[in-house]
Length: 477
RNA sequence: GGCCCCAUCGUCUAGCGGUUAGGACACCGGCCUCUCACGUCGGUAACACGGGUUCAAUUCCCGUUGGGGUCGCCA
Image 1 (spheres, rainbow, N blue to C red):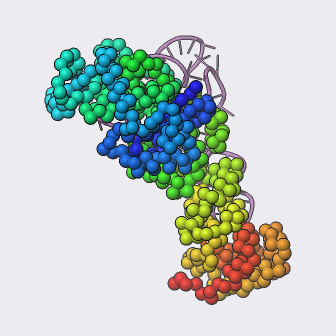
Image 2: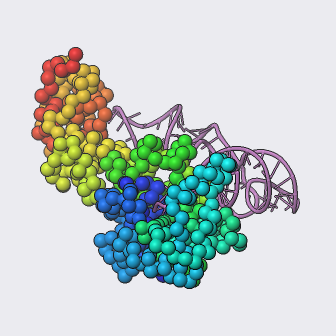
Image 3: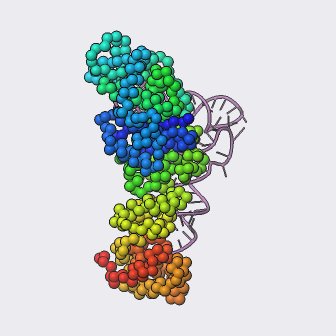
């Protein structure tokens, strides 16, 4: 039975790179009909906040990365928040000490820091390694202590990564690392191992920046006499310039993409294809991803985030009804229209007008912008457009067009187009001659969906009103 | 610097010994066209380098170079 987990630390928003880690785990769980566990690693009390927990949970929900065990849903191996598991860590660390696998270290932070500095003064390039001062200590002074693992001085740890293959790290490069702080709160490696072990996690998939943590973690499994889970490390997602991806490179939090009007499935699609491939396929529904995901086609090389490709994938998801259904499109679009002051709109009306911009809008923000003229009455007029196309000279022809529209029945795009074409022929006009003035009068802009579609969508009365109510002279200088 | 990892178009990638090295995004042209898009046709563009192994290397091995990760009582 596959059991995987995503274990964010609540120290901020949910980073796009974190989402990819969550996604790969989630996809694997779904593919294997296994269990996806969400665990909150809040042992850094300095930086962890409950607000951040909320943000992360909300982001995962928005993305649709539902968890089977974890905060809110519970499960048989809870609690799923580390600070609520301190008793479990204590029990485990004491067991290691009892078994002679770990020991209490009474060295103070200050002492160690001094040693570190001294070493640095002698050799700036040297790496400080805990000298094992308390390793064989037999007394038990009444002083604060940390718990350190007795790491073998020779030998090596080898594991087979599902992405990178066999990885071997010599033990000589390791040290007796700290498992539990002097205040009884575990450190990352210890907490993660105890949790993964007690939660029955079978595969740990995480970013490559954690690869260095794997040997120490495997040592812990060995110390506990437990079998280590499988490991899969994902290549890094870097900024376009090769740096670590951060806010200074643009939007990196899920919340920002939600605000920018991205579709959650498009976000997952882009992230899935980053470091993983399925032949030449670029666009996937979630079901397709679940069905196709594997570790064999996960890449080893780091990659660079490409905002343009991300946008293109989002555009694709907004274009294809199979990826974003009419109802979903409507629901996601509504808040963005509301944000523009177009509240209380009739869902059916919004839905009916989506075909006008389906192929054009790259985001829901873009869609709301392109549809603004439909719902705003009068429409917002672009000054430059009015100046260029709506002079006194255009009023008569627009008036005539309005007259053509007045008797049209049925009020369909086809019928409107046929009648307008007939009128153009009769008057010896070209569509070019009237399209732009009409477009500006109807939408306030020089760019819009097709003229006939616009007329049909506005409805007879509003179309006629907009065509005939143009000021004799524009308001612009 | 120690330890670990990586290397195909600008970017994401296909390739798993023999291919005109394919696709997507971006970019540049043409077509379509009432604007904007969409669509469509075409183009520029890559196997880091050096040794092996092999009849044959982008593919396997080694090295070089380049890049990345990590060296905390952070995660």
